[in-house]
Image 1 (cartoon, rainbow, N blue to C red):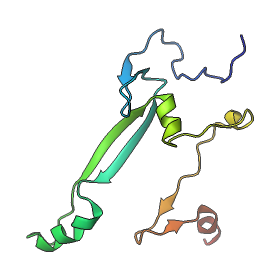
Image 2 (cartoon, one colour):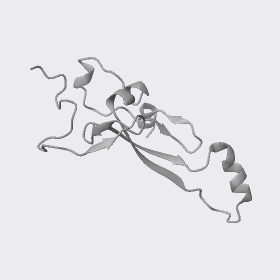
Image 3 (cartoon, rainbow, N blue to C red):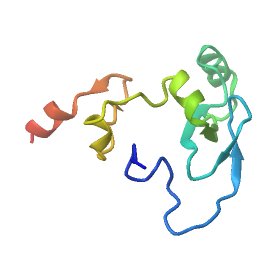
Length: 119
């Protein structure tokens, strides 16, 4: 039987069985190695209320805590919500991670190509 992917859509090499996790979107049981995992870091407070809280805060240099969540998606939910994209046959051979979007302190995107040429 032909293999669509080198790892058959899993990351299980050498393990016979892997415990399932629940998809964060639809609660489907997915093997932990097959699930698409993302680690989200967000502010606990929505952006509209941050300024009000910082002005009302007694402590001058108080940093608001962040919310750290590990999200598991099944393959269909990850594709549907554009967490991952469908790739062509040649594109599936590319194992390099996608280029990460970086932001500076002002919230502007940093172009990695321009940043390397300046020094």
